[in-house]
Image (cartoon, rainbow, N blue to C red; front, side, top):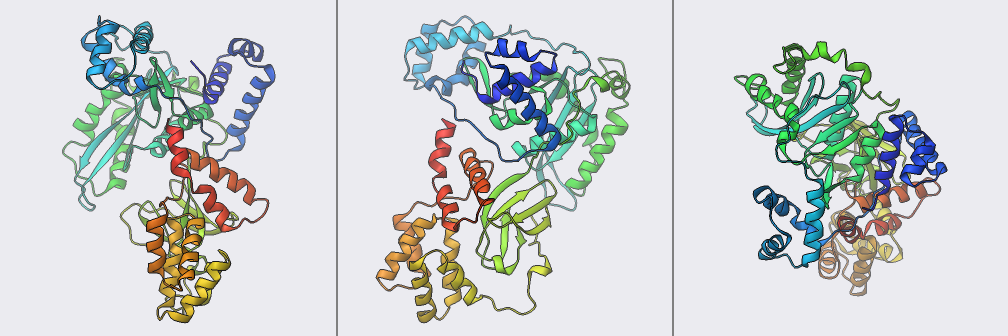
Length: 509
């Protein structure tokens, strides 16, 4: 199977940690010794000096039979001796249009790798393995709205020590942030971590082999552990069973004001109940058993992985930036500008396109009223600053300057029309906006309604990218690198981001 760059980097790092020499790594992996040395130096530099949150990702080829992988697994569970002929017939009944040979090859590959059905949980050595999983719970908070929260659980296979956290989401960023917290809680991570088939970790299966999410593989490489995805819950019994204690002991017959109080109690419960209770299998307290495991965990890197989210936003006409449904203020002089947002777990940093900081806020849970820094608001100011709006619109080009002058001359509510026109950059590429403005000027139609109608008829809406979109992330990284050399026109940024949907579709293929 074709190896991705992330697969190669991960293999080099983890095998090196197991004592392989650079000569052996180069020979076994088919690499030059310079390549091996470069990989190890780069990862070590990242672990000690930090790195960028912007990932570099790789598109992968998809076969038509990949869409039927789950169905094939179910059929093999029900009919272990099914032939390739019958499997092909079964798949054809469900709309499969491929040939018999590809089914036969896939069946042979899966049977060569499938474990016997009766796989049992086994004990692992200290520092060898950990298991992670999620479980949703509906919580009727007493001072916050009722919510479905996701319980993140991580259990060390040898000692059975556990880390718990309740979150609003079970997405990629929540996963890696809680894994960082897990590593800090235990003082390290085990060499191997078991996961289920969550998309944050696994993209798909190919010929019975897991194709990992490259962003997650980069994270695993930073901390040095080997991810392993299991297909059945019984293979992760050490992390599945503790959820019974969460339901029966931690949550049972208790009320919580809000998510913060729930997590505070969960931290206390782990330390005072889970860690010190005699385990039914090991017959020891997890905290005592952990003493034999502590020094065998992978050591923490000097610099934690950068788990920040990065994305572009258009500032609203009243100088707010929307992030995760909460509005954060910026200076009024940045109204309707394109800005870059970097969101960590606790803090929101906002930069202009030259990467100069313009605002910083504590990150607030949703729902939340707008977050306002009074220093961003002048004591006396009209609702719309006409000269400022004219200047921003004119900066887009000569035809936009003509349009702005026409709006000021002909419209009673000129500020509204100027602001609405500028705001359209949030949904349309600047080239499309300028084409619409040129057509409006040609017909002497100096109003925002006309611009909106022209765009709806002639242009395709698009959204500004963030690091959750792989093709967009590459463009952000390139634009950021060039912006450090010299200022770039606003249209360069938006044009570079305008084709996101097509490239993202290619990346998913």
